[in-house]
Image 1 (spheres, rainbow, N blue to C red):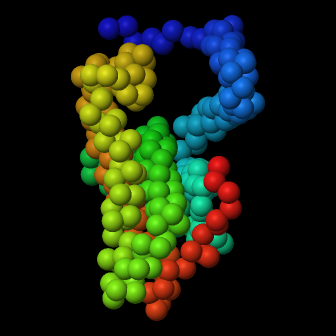
Image 2 (cartoon, rainbow, N blue to C red):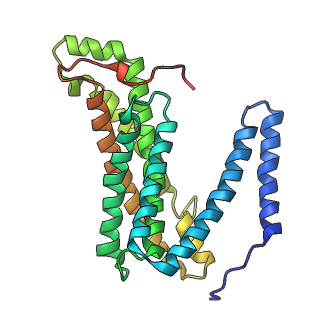
Length: 270
């Protein structure tokens, strides 16, 4: 198998960008109100990925653990911001940002460190060629699960506040009063990654496997790495969603087990 990658030049990327521009024009013609968001997202993709390429090139050359840790921290903080931005009714104050960020930190970093030290085993264990991509895939997918879990939890609690308060008046504690909502929030958060696992290899070829095959790796080696990644992401998303659901549910009640919806933002749905 040839171990070379076909290089892409600016013209190739411009042609691909033209497809996004056509999509933006179509959304504008259909009056979807999405054309500007599509174009801005496209520009962000170009800028962010090019900057990432420069940063990773420098990291691969230096391999300094403090710089690698700093990059990981920045990735976590940005992921926390994205989790909060994707919710229609986020928690107010530091909880709006900290709850999802804490869950992702504990879950994603723990599983990534475990995989680096006990499964993949690069030398040194923090080798950026492995640590940064693994952590990035963990955070990117866990972020979606956490955001969906929190969004469903707070939205459902607001919509079903009368049911929750009736259960509390009948003598149920906060766990029992919100149990159904919490469970459904967990299911919502886990649906994307479970669907991704079910479709992998039949409906879709996941990103990491595609990249390795394009780079000239053995398809079987690429498949093994993709299996590892899928299992890591599923476990990380599941643990983070469970943690987020429990912490978020607890935050909705005070010490006297009264429902406190003033702790979430209740402005107009987006």
